[in-house]
Amino acid sequence: MRLLITSLAALFLLACEKKTVAEKETTLDTKGTPYAHTANILSFGPRPPGSTGAKQVRGYVTSVLEKSGWVVGAQTVTSETPLGPRTFTNLIARFPTQPKADPWKSPIDGLLCAHLDSKYYPNKRFLGADDAASACGLILTLAQELAERPEQATRLELIFFDGEEALSEDMGPKPNGIFDGIYGSRAYATRWRNTAQKPSFGILLDMVGHRDLSIKVPADSPPQLLAVMKKAATAKGYGDIFGVSEGSIFDDHIPLNQAGIPTIDIIGDFQRFDWWHTPKDNLDLISAESLEITKEVVTAMLDELLP
Ligand SMILES: [Zn+2]
Image (cartoon, rainbow, N blue to C red; front, side, top):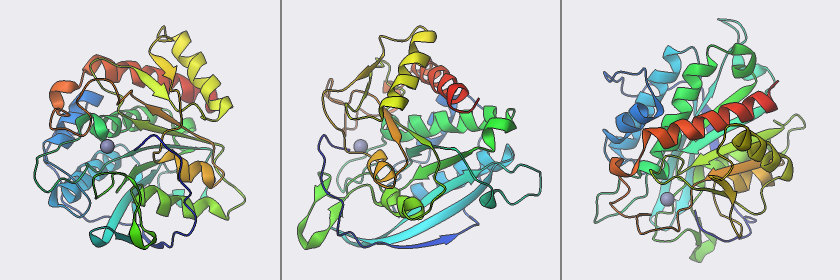
């Protein structure tokens, strides 16, 4: 992401959807804490769009979700990028109201999402542990716990976005009308743009497992969701960790907000220190305790938003 707001107008996206994923099955232990899921995601190596790592990680995520009763679909989109046309694949999951019911037909109230891709670098090995494997690992644990609370799970859609990261060095507008970054979330948001029955909230997680956890949500976050986050963080004793950034942040929540779904970006302060978008963003940076803190706060938010 980057700290700026840029118009997303004049973007042409070709989106097609399919409801099945037949990607690599995994032999990893799929029960686990957010930290264990994060480590498992990283074990596949870098996962930029179109890579073998990305495909294998989608297989892992799908396997964990399906084992706890979620139904997983994929949305693919081919977009122009600075490197030529590229195909991006979002994973989308819902929890059926009855064991064999079609979950895609029932209305939902909220979105819980993160980006699964790691930033592409031609010349260095970049894992993106906190950017954003940790957020995806946390959502996997939440999904396993939500399976025990079907009254909440059936009201949610989980999304693992592809292509959040720019394929060139910096996210933003490029020549030929290309906007480099947030490819998957832009394609996903088009699904909701012209529908009357939209989810009432979205929670995006990004960089939520740093060992020195400091959450800084965008200053222009939807006020009602900011209030819910602050209330939840304060109630859990983490009011000092969950703060507000000085400006806007460009991330996957932008197209969701533009599509009329108020979405908060619960994002770590990536401007501190020198780890962001460097090989230092590996498992050493991640703390199991930080992930548990974020999990507690997000769980309390869901309790407030899905009573
Ligand atoms: Zn990044």
